[in-house]
Each structure stands twice: as structure tokens, then as C-alpha cells.
Amino acid sequence: MIYLHLDFNLMETKPNVSFENLQAAFAHKTDKELKKMYHIFGLMHYPLLVKLGIGIARLGFKLGLPIRNTIKKTVFSQFCGGENIDACEPVVVLLAKYGVDAILDYSVEGKKDEDSFENTKEELLRTIAASKGRKNLPFTVFKISGIADTDILAKKQAGKTLSESESKRFDLARARVMGLCETAFNADVRIMVDGEESWFQDVVDGMVFEAMQRFNQKTAIVFNTFQMYRHDMLRRLKDAHHDAVAKGYFLGVKLVRGAYLEKERERAEKLGYKSPVHELKRDTDRDYDKALQFCVNNKQRVHLISGTHNELSNLVLSELVDLHGMKRSDERVYFAQLYGMSDHISFNLAKAGYNVVKYLPYGPVEEVLPYLSRRAEENSGISGQSSRELQLIKQEIRRRKHLPKLPKIA
Image (cartoon, rainbow, N blue to C red; front, side):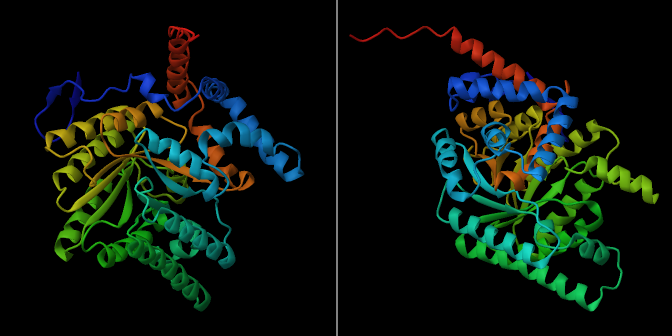
């Protein structure tokens, strides 16, 4: 039995999807792949070992040590689809076989120069081209910080006067954002803009909402990210909906809990202002589930992508879809998780008929190391994701060992 702690009357209901079906969760993994997963998450169980490993990897690449293949065959293959778009194709096809869609996620962090920003933009255009007409590649995604100087964005948000050079670079960044959204619109491919730090998120929002007003007239093509660990985000979500209704466009919403918790708190303490993020996780969880309810309640205007590994929030959204009499395949609601994590959530939701997408990061091994480091760190520790993943993987390995062997055919 689960409880939906939402604004409507508290209700008790039997879950309409179970995350305990490990056969469905790991059907796409061979015994060998499952054992490799077990060893990777087993190592991530120890935070000190994770930090040491990340440090060694960074130093190894810096010194030119022969560690590339080891990383590629282990942690890279667990959390990334490949080194380029073509290399991701077998993973995309495999996921689609089990009803799970994919999002090509170029996960190389750009340098702060215009050439790097242009190179990233060109790669993002390639992800749009690769997704065009592909039902199992329904979204593309990008971070504005990958195509714009965040110092300039922060200066703009702070109300400071930009120099002539900075103004020119800001205009170039805005043109890249609008160009990507327009290309996605012309290709009929939905495009998500990831969330950023609070000190330049307002500027990002301004660009994204402008793009929504231009390209979301008939359906949601452009999606903005709402990080619910901010204590003002539920209000901002409602304000965004009000603006969409007033101006007659569809609101594309991607909900996440938030990506910069420690950074936000440290900056707030250093500069002496109130932290914009909730002090308690339960407050973030509460706002996240209220945001799910708000989006589904306003499904005539809001299209939703719920990006979370939280089991309860995924159950809440599945219940909301059914309670509202929506088809589980309704294109207005998607569940999203990262590739290599929470397969028990993704594949069971897909098996139950809901729309599910996996973020599929890609890029050269050396250049996605920052992304891999974040995945390793967030999965480390007894209370981290690795503990749950380990438990489930171990259970599936044991289940497979006890399966009766098929009789040999003469």
C-alpha cells in the first residue's frame, strides 16, 4: 500500500506498478554484465575508495597513463552510451526492445571560449538530426552553460553593465539557444534545457520562456527545468503556468530535485544571503510531489518530464496518470532516469505501459570524466544509490542461479 501525500484528500491505494520485478528490471543484462554491475556498485559503496579512484583517474589522464581502456570497459560503459552518437546506437536499440526510449546527452563540459561553445552547439545540432523521426529518441537536451559564458550570465542577472565585448558574447549565446530550439522545432524533436545555478538561472529562464512562446504554440517542443530543492520553485512553476496560459503557449516542464545543493549553500554562506534551497530533504520531496500534482492537474497546458530516481515520486506520478484517466502512453507525461541507474524503476514502468526515457550520456572517455565523477560520488556511501542498486543486483544474480536449467534437446 502507498500513500499519496498531496493536496487532495489523503488516499490509500494499492500501487499500480511494482519496482520489485527484478526479472523485468534486468532482462536486458546478460549474466556477465550483471556481475560487472555488481562489482562497479560494490566499489562505489566506499566513499574513500571512490574519491581515491577519481583522483587517480584524473592524474592518470594528465600523465598519459594507459588507463583509458580500463575506464571505458568499466564505469564508462555502465553510465555512458558510447564515445559518439553512432556508438550509442546499439544501446538505443537495446533499450527500445524493452519499451524504454533514450535521450542523446552530450556530456562534455565546454571550456569558456567561443570556439568551444560553437563546437558544442554543432554537436547538439547533430543530436537533433539523429533524433529526427526516431520514436525511441523523443527528446534532445542541452545545458546553456555548455554554450555560454556563465560569468557573463551571472553579471547580467546581477544587473551589472556588460562591456561591449561581453554584450556581443551574450548575444551570441542567446542566438545559439534560439537556433537550437528553432532547429528542434523544425525537426519536430522536443528539446530540454537543463537547470543551472541560481545566480544565473533567471537569465536562462528568460531565454527558455522566450523560446517557448515562439515554438510551443501547438505543442510543447521546448522544456525548461524546475529544480524543486529551491524553496521558491513551486511558486515559480505556477507563475510559469500562468504566463503560458496568458500568452497562449504550452509549458514544457522537466522536474528534478536539484543538482547544485552544496554549491548553492556554500555560496549563500560566503556572500551572506539566505540559501535558496530547502534545509531539509523532506521539504524538497514534498514540493516535488506537489509539483507533479500541479502539472498533471494542468495537463491541458503542461507537458511533463519527471526526472527522478525516487521510488515514491515515481509511484505518485504513475498513480496520478491513472487517477486522471489518462492513457499510460499519453505523450504529455514522461518518466526519466539516468542510464546505468535505477533500472528497477525504468524497466518496470515501461513494462506497465508508461512513457520512460533514459538519459544516455556520450562523449570521449577523457572528456566525460567530470560526468562520471559526479555519478560515482552520488552513488557512494551506505546511504547512497549504490546500496539500493547492490541489493537489487545481488537479488537478481541469486534468482538467476536458482532458475531451473532447460532440458537439452537431442
